[in-house]
Amino acid sequence: MRVTVRYFAGAQAAAGVAQEQVSASTVDELLSRLAEAHGGALSRVLAASSFLVDGVSVREPAYRLSDGATVDVLPPFAGG
Amino acid sequence: MHCFGQRRQALIPPAGLLWAHMQVHTAVLRAVVVDAALSVAEHEALVAHPGAGAVVSFGGVVRDHDHGRSVEALEYVGHPTAEQIIAEVAAGIAAAGGVYAIAVSHRIGKLVVGDVALACAVSSAHRREAFAACSRLVDEVKHRLPIWKRQVFEDGTDEWVDCP
Image (cartoon, rainbow over all chains, first blue to last red; front, side):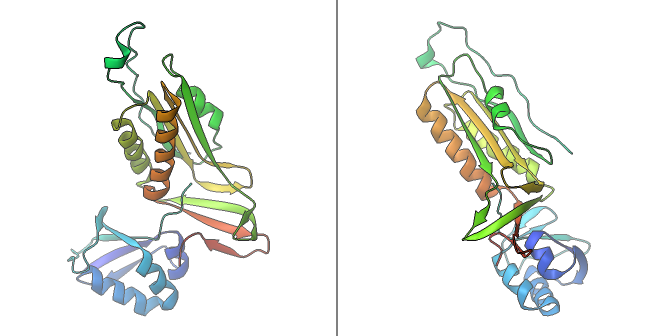
């Protein structure tokens, strides 16, 4: 499955790009690929992040991604 | 600048009615994320209500230090859903009841020391409810709002706050 990954804030800084296209069939697989591609800095951010798949919060690593889905990487919030 | 909010008119009971038995209707008069300067006083004025004996407000202000380092400036960025979430947070506080009106705004973009990043105000008949609701509002905003903060230090380095 080809998905679009959108990085925000510290995740964007660690990935070095705002968004990219990646192939993966589950959230777990996607995160492994992103960590492989970008290395330690992004791995640390991913471990602390929450994820939206097409706008819906997903906590299940085995969650199956559909082709064309958009996955948002949200680092810990720091408003206020 | 974009600005989106909920505006509802408070149901103001006629004076002299049985106040103790009346359900207070809470109005969310503002719940927005904006890239413009914020005024706490403006939020206080918004929640003014003839039945209110207490108006409690809060201003989250950019300070010049963090963990012992000198901070020069801050940048806040928000997820596209931030405005929807701040409206949900305000609606949640309103649903809990006990207050007349709520106004809350979070600023995004580049801020300098002294700028208000978060402005909110709550009005209620008595101070206890207003203090509690305002405190809960601030906690919920900080916990749930998908907004991030980048600190630029005096020496030119920067960091995303709370990001490992």
